[in-house]
Amino acid sequence: MGPAEATFADVQKLIVFFLKAWEEAGPGAFGFTGATQETINEIASEEFLKERLSKRDVKMYFVEDGGNILGLAVTRKIDENAIELSGIIVLEASTRKGIGTELFEKVISSAKHDGFGKIVVKTEVLNQRAIGFYKKKGLSEVGKTRENVEGRPVDLVVLERCLR
Image (tube, rainbow, N blue to C red; front, side, top):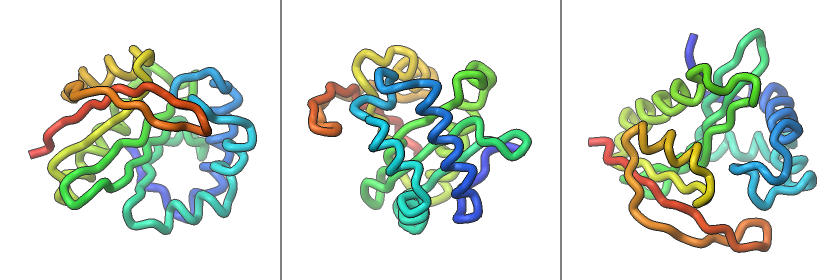
C-alpha cells in the first residue's frame, strides 16, 4: 500500500504511535534529544496533532500494518524553495525492513510534486545511523549548527539534497 499522508482521521493512531516510539526509545535516543515525558505527552495529544495537521506548511506521512503505524515522517516548509524533513521515526521492531526508505521516498516525491527544489535535514552529530541513511539517499553534509532543544544546546549536522 505504501506511505499515506496523515489526516485528522489518523490522530488516534498517531497518538498510539508516538507513545509507543517514546516507550521503546526513551529519553537518551537520537531523534528524541531533549525530550521529556511531558514533551511527549504534549506531542502525542489530540490538540497538538490536530493543530499540526491543520498547518499548511507541515505534513506527516506514515506506514501502517493492520491499523498500527510502524513509521512516521514529518516535513516542514522552510520557504518557497526548501522543505525540512524534521525526522523519520520507525518503531524498533520494524527497523531494517525498508520503512524508513519508503517514507523518505514519499517525502521526496511529495516535495517535488509541491515544487520544492531542496530538502534539508538536521540530525545530531553523533547519530551516525541517521547520517549514513541520509547520505545513502543522496543528501550531502553542508555544515553543522547548534540549536537549543528543550533548554539545552544540541550539536547538529545539516544535510541537503537538490530536488531539481
